[in-house]
Image (cartoon, rainbow, N blue to C red):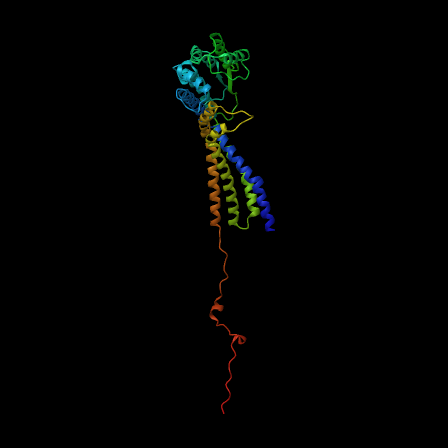
Length: 376
């Protein structure tokens, strides 16, 4: 009977308990990250700041003779660097930074206040009109024209490629790193600015009106509490498996503790791997996807865009790591309880009577005595 119970206990752990514990750990961690006010209010600004740093760094790279750059990439970057204003400065002067720090930041803070129950739930909309105006501002147009003016002159092949782009701007084109004629340059700049705002609506609804009862409830804390209650589901599966496989109190806590420790460890390992995925991203350009070979410029962009994932991972994956670490600690404590209920097998003591009474010799065990002949 014992082998059968052990078999079903292992089956429940492998097919039910561990997958549920792994999934719930990730679900609770991600939920805590998404509803966190810090995630809503801080992460967009950090991503924008890191993006600006990457763009400025790439432009500065164009001033060097980095051997990893191909000729076309170096020509584009040098043309951007020759304008005299970095992409970050262009964002500031065009008004994009003002829109990010004003409209976007205010809308995200309003959502955060609603989730914390500090303000009444109202619809939150993001005004995109200032952004569209900034993308079509004279500063942006001047910068684009400056980039084109610093490119080398086009040959026949380059001019043909630019004409194809003007005729079908929404197609897939490999834009040559050369300066077309003045007419084509003006058309390209106008097309680029039109495409930048073509799919941007005037307003974006970030949050609909939601009736929250009771008023003033802290949604963040409530959702976090509810998600932690979900841990009862894998806990019941672990309890059932431990009852089937255990033969004593001590072994019951060993079954439960080891199972919890394994589930938390799997979630912790996967979360740490996801957080460090940016380091593995540097290997992506070495592979081909559908026959596409990454250019040196694309390889450098992939490598630097990994820093953006580091920012995202800090807000999204870190809560999963914290929850998984807590699960591991709980499993370790449960396993430690098995030693509190551990008892050594009892040894049958010798009775007092057996210790005081002398041993009765067995006549058969005594050696045969030699008999002396009778004296005369």
